[in-house]
Amino acid sequence: MKYRKPTKAIITDAGCASRFLPITKTIPKAMLPIGDRPIMQLVVEECVDAGIQEIIIVATKEGRPIYEDYFYDAAIKMKKQLHSQAKDDRYEPVQKVLDFPKITVIEQDPSYPYGNGSPIASARKFICDDEAFVVAYSDDVVFGSSDIKTLINSYESHPDAKAIIIAQEMPREVLNKYGIIKLADEEKRTLRNIIEKPKIEDAPSNLTSYGRYLLTPEVFEYLDPRNTGLDNELWTVDAITKMAEIGDVYVENTQGKWMTTGDPKNYCMTLLSYVMDHEDYADDIRKLIEK
Image (tube, rainbow, N blue to C red):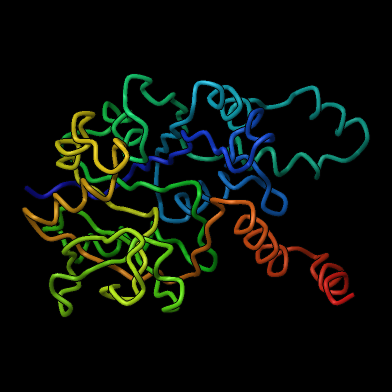
């Protein structure tokens, strides 16, 4: 069956983010700032750049009202105050957020097991049976290009795809820290499986998988709460591997630069990378680092 081109994206941020405590006791991890906006907004903007028309953010029970406030609340009192001070330009970033395409915030189904597949399964009712869709983990940000656009363009070339995933080539010495892709057909660039944190000498390639996927509704057959894997978690990569057993799952290299915000060290490195490339105070930061 050929599915319609994606117009919807699921963005997930439903974990407990324990490595960032105590701050994540109060706010979701993807609301931590990268420059002048939260991580989640960078991921939303990547979707918008690709022409996505509807975004479903899957959050925790505690995180849902925070996202709803950020993406829905017009902050009228603040707007009036800025207008009275002739500072209307400072409200423009708020208006940009309000002008995003349709964003729906939902809570992850509390009956589902822990795991990165559960937020996707929780958004099932928003996906029609005849449409492909994209998934983005809010841990992952991409600079210089939209992986979502790359996925959609690839789907136009591979309408037979059960799924399409994005990869980035990584240095050999860090291959034991990520999910590494094993190709079934190197010429077609189709997936056999993803090996999680292999020994460096056992890594089948230098292609690292991360949270940017184009999926078809067939994936929900495998994102079932009964199909838990390692540590009794529901894993997206397990479902994608099952898809690769019944059809072609294509692998595309990112056209940008992927960085993760999944732990404090990598978050800081991602923040600095963004500031150096995008903020007008980048030279001041460079001078501080040189000292």
